[in-house]
Image (cartoon, rainbow, N blue to C red):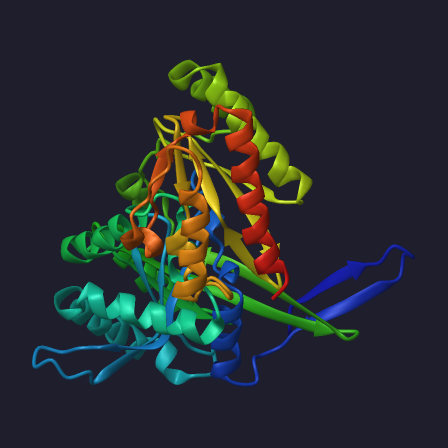
Length: 380
């Protein structure tokens, strides 16, 4: 008998949804690609829910001779750069009972031994190019890291390499229904394998009344496995407006805080979303301007007084993806009294100290230059 769930609408009407098989395996794979949160990160780690970054679908896995005879359904990374290998099967596929276990272990053994992290990064960049995303910003969003920290992305991929070399990976068996024998194997492997993690995820589909509901559930987290693999939450600091300005004033003085406040007021007047950093020691304020479905970054301010121009991000966005337009922006910035950024920094994140904006006239000229840049973006 098929399982059911019931939805009660605001008008008290009851809709019955009945569990239904996926039409084919590709449908479930496509849903996972489009909605990574179908993998319930809070069930995997309640104290620090996992977030997901899709590297690619159908990722080639090299063998000892270098040839890619294997192909993994999905490869994700979580916010701690842990490679997460996903194999998808429908419950009606006879291979889901035992054959899929050997298949996954084959992927894991060869991936750990022979995956160059540069190749994985190239797969991810290619996916971002197809989907119109900025790969560096996607990594920063995953980590909830400051997008103004240019070294953060490289550190993340270095950690991916470190995790692979240490065998710190996660194996996920995903199906609409996991058979009992596979769940027992998953629980056994998860308890025995360290530092690798082995889990199963059911994503049951319920349909009815023109609606479709997906219900995910994780298997394999036995008490023994949780105790063996538990890790405390990461130590991070979430900055906000009050803590940012308090730290900036303490380290750089009231004039620096006044200049930063003027930039914040200007950004708010232009309906920017303000990103407050998560650095353990240093905080940042980054105005984010949304236009035509894209986030645009012009400048970041740090609690140690650095004003950081975001040319490295801008070069991936329309209008400022032109070297000539970025050079014009750089030239305008260099017209500010005391500012002299090298021309070679037009693709980087050059900085000057916020004390140069202490003078009201110079500050007004700087805001006018930001206004020019924002107008260029919004006119596109």
